[in-house]
Image (cartoon, helix red, strand yellow):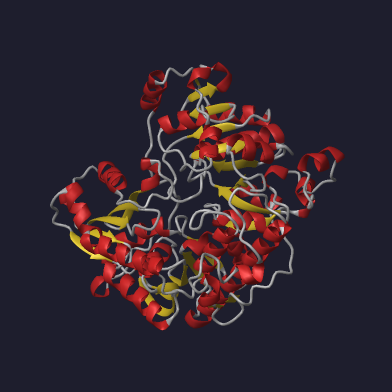
Length: 596
C-alpha cells in the first residue's frame, strides 16, 4: 500500500510524507522548499517531492490522508464556543471563523486542491481526526508495545489535550480536554503578549524564562495543578475589547515587539514556563494513572517544550519517553499516513523511528554544479569530518550541510551551524553576527551518545534535541573577570561551565545525543573534535538566519553563507572560505530584518 500523508489546515506548518507498506520513506515541510517560514499553503511542493522520491505518480497512490477533520467540525465547535460565551463574539472572530470554514469547504478540505495540482487518482481521500493523527505519529513510531500517549497542542477541531492507550498496535481513546482549555493556546497568548510571534516563537519564551524569578501570579489564567489542568479562557483572551484585554489589567501593558526586554517580562516568562511544566506533568500523571503504562509517547506543539519534557523524564513518573521529532502540526502527516492500518480492527506497523533524516539529499556532482553556477570558490576535501573538526578546534564557526535534511524544527547535524562550545564568546557571536537574533537565546549541544552521562545529568537518549537536562556540576569552573564583563548579565552561572556556549543561565542545556548508527559522518566529526580538544560536544544550531526556514538545497546554503558572518561552509565534500569569495555576492540579511 502506498500512502501519502498531508498536513493542511491554512493555519501553519503544511507538510507531506509518503509511506510504502508501513515504512516511512520521505517527509518534508512545505516551508523548506517554498522558503516561507511556517508556510500554511497547500503543500504542493512537499507532495511533489514525496512523489519524486518514491518514484511514483499521483494516480498510483492508494490513500491520500489529511491530518485534519473536514471543515465542518472546526466551524461547528467555534459556533458552539461563541454561543456559550467561551470565546468573545466579535466581528473579527466570527469573520475569521467563517472565512476559514468557507475557504476549506470550497477546497473540500484539501481534496479539491490535490486534484487541481496532481490530477485524478484512484486513491481514497481520508480525513483523520487531528488528535488521532498526532497520537498515531507518536505511538506508531515509538517502538513501544504498550504506552500512554499524550497529545497537547493549541487546538484541533475541538480538541486541546487528549490521552490515549497504545497497545498491541492499536490506539484506545481515554480522555479529551476540549479547546479552548488549552496549554498550547495559553502559552501562545503569552508569547504574543511578550512581543513575540505566536505559533512560532514559543521557544523564545522558554529561553527567556530562566532569566526571570518567581513572583508573578497567573492563577487568574490557568490552574496548572488541577487534575486535569484548567485554562481560564475568558480571562486569558479577554472580552473582545482589544488584544490582551484580559491580561493587561492584571499584568500591565504588553511588550512592543523588538523593544527592550525588562525584568517584568523575564518574570512573566518564568511564570508562564513554570505553569506550562506543571500542567504537562499533571496530564502525564493522569495518563499514567488511567492507562497503567509507564512508557510515554508525546506529540502536539506543546511536546516541543523541551524543558517540560526534561522535567517529565527526570520525574520518575515514566520509565521511557518518546517525543515525536516533528511534534507540531507538520508531524501529523506521519500519523495520518498510517491511519488506514487501523481500519476494520487493524493494527499499526509500530516501527521505532531510528532517525529524522527524512528529507531530500544532494550528491557531490549536483553540489559542484551549483558552486560553479554561483561562481563560488571551493576546495575538495578527502575527509570533511577531519577538516571540520580541525577548523572548529580553532574556534571557527561553520555551516555543515550533509546528507538528507531533517524533518521537524531541529537541525540534527545535516543542516547545521556548528561551533566550539568551550568558547565564552561563541553564544553572543552566533546570536548577533550569524543568526541575527536575540542575544539571550541559548544554543544546543550535540554530544556523543557514549559520552552524554559524563557531561550532562542525562542517562537516556535525546536524539531529537527535545529534552533539557543540566550540565554536570563537575563540568563547572570558576568565573573569570573577563567573562563577567563579556556576559554583562545578572545571572553569571553560564560562564561557570566548561562549555559556556551551550549552557543556559540555569545550568541547563537542550541536548542532542549523536549516534554512530544514524549519522556516522556527524558522529565521526564529534569523535575527531574530542580527540583534538578532549571535549565530545559541539554547538549545534539550525542553518538559517532569523525569519527564514532551515536551508534545504545547496543554493539555500550558499545564500545563507554569503548573507551572514559564517567563516566557513562544508557542503558535501567541498569547503568554502568566506575570505575567498567575491564580496559582490554578499547578501545583507540585517537590512531586510530592519525593514521587517
